Structures are given as C-alpha cells and as structure tokens.
Amino acid sequence: MRLKDKVALVTGGSQGIGRAIAARFAAEGAKVAISGRGREALEETAAYITGQGGEVLIIEGDVQYKEQAERMVDDVLSQWGKIDILVNNAGVNKTASFLEITEEDWDWHMDINLKGTFLVSQRVSKEMVKQGSGGSIIQMSSVNGLAAESDQAHYNATKGGINMLAMSMALELAEHGIRVNALCPGFIETRLTKPLIDNAPAIENYLKTIPMKRVGQPEDIAAAALFMASDESSYMTGHCMVIDGGQIIKLS
Ligand SMILES: NC(=O)c1ccc[n+]([C@@H]2O[C@H](COP(=O)([O-])OP(=O)(O)OC[C@H]3O[C@@H](n4cnc5c(N)ncnc54)[C@H](O)[C@@H]3O)[C@@H](O)[C@H]2O)c1
Image (cartoon, rainbow, N blue to C red; front, side):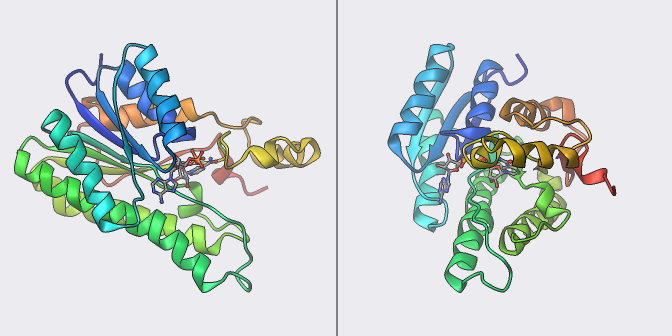
C-alpha cells in the first residue's frame, strides 16, 4: 500500500476524475476526504469507497468561496488531525467563442478553477508548513493549459494559470518538503465529455486527433495522481505531467 497512514483531500471528488483518484488513494491505504457540490453524488461515491474497504469523509462545499474552501481543510483536520495530500480537482468548463464569452462566464471559470485552487492550496500549505512533515499537492490542469483549444479561451487561461501556480508554489514550498505538481489530462470520459462521446460521427472524427486512438479513462489519471502523491515521485516538483494518448504531440 503506497499511501498507508496518509490523509488526502480531493476536491471535486464526487464524480469523474476526482472520484477515480479518491477511490485509488483509498485502495492504497489513505484516509480520503472528498468535497464537492451536491450531497447525493458525494454519498454515492463515499458508499462505493467504503464498500471497497476504504475510509472516507464527505464535505459539501464550493471552492470559490474562501470560508467554504477553508472549512473543507478544517473538517479534514478535525476528523483526522493532519493532511498529507491535496488534489485540487474541482473544475468547470463551458464552451464559448472568445468574441462571445461574457464577463460573468469568465469570472465563473476564474473563480472556481483558478481562485478555488489558490484558496484551498494556501490553506493546506500553511497547515503542511506547520505540521513540518512535508506533503504533496496536485493541481488538476489540462492539456488546455499547454496548448490553445478554440472556443475555450477562458478555460485555457485558467489551466495555464494553474500550471504557473503549481510551478510558483513548488518554488516557494520546496524548503518545507512540500511538492507541488500539475496533471494535464487530455480527453477523458466523464460527465463533462459524455455529450461528444455519445455522438458517434463526432467522436470518430475527434479520435483522429489522438495517436493512441482511444478516449482516456478517469483511472488513467488516478494512476498518475497516485505516483505524484506517493514517495515514488519524491524528487519531482513543479512538473506538469501530460496524460493524453499523445494528442498534444501531433502536428498532423
Ligand atoms: N474530462 C476531461 O476530459 C478533462 C480533461 C482535462 C482536465 N479535466 C479537469 O479535471 C477536473 C475534473 O473534471 P471531470 O471531467 O471529472 O468533471 P466532472 O464534472 O465529472 O466533475 C467535477 C467535480 O468538481 C466538482 N465541482 C465543480 N464545481 C465545484 C465548485 N465550485 N466547488 C466544489 N466542487 C466543484 C463537482 O461537484 C464534481 O465533483 C476538472 O478540473 C477538469 O477541468 C477534465
């Protein structure tokens, strides 16, 4: 068990990629808190993890609000007394062309994806510094943080910001033994991407952009998150890891 006796918080852990990460961490021996919006999905995921023999805590909350973001961390500390691993996975995505994106939608993406990541990260980092035993922070970015996708300027900007935040945090927190890395998934099968996956002609066309010719699964990302969370990546910090079936390397 690679995360035995570790305590982890996974934001947006109720479904999709966050759920797979939480389940994988629990299977590797970690106590896992999952936060998100919507109690029903949180409870369903908690029941799944408990059914597999894992230990889990549910925290309902919205990462864009400071007091709710900080309460997520406080709840973990009151339950288990420490925090070793944070995965800032909560995120949203809406399609809109650059000429049409509204200020409201711009702010919505910035507040949840980027500011939410900052708020939870800062609270957890302060606690990790106080604890004095280091830690691993994983920021959920995207290939959209490394290359631009049309009709996603607002989302691309949040993920590019997350990559730079991960590097900046890694730089300042290294002296405390806190490692900070980012995951950059490509196209992963979740509720976010289901409409395209269910559209047979569209997905057939889309798969031409992926050298490995398949859509990624949440478990593909969970495996990389486990590596980043565990001591197996103990000399890795400030890294943005791409898991995309080769999509981003393809020029034609
Ligand atoms: N699915 C993909 O292809 C893909 C690719 C690259 C990156 N990502 C990123 O991975 C992360 C998870 O994506 P997913 O596809 O699993 O999405 P999803 O919609 O299935 O799950 C999102 C999770 O985030 C939570 N969440 C959303 N807004 C929140 C808020 N304001 N406060 C707290 N929790 C909130 C939801 O409750 C849910 O648990 C996101 O950051 C997304 O940008 C996804």
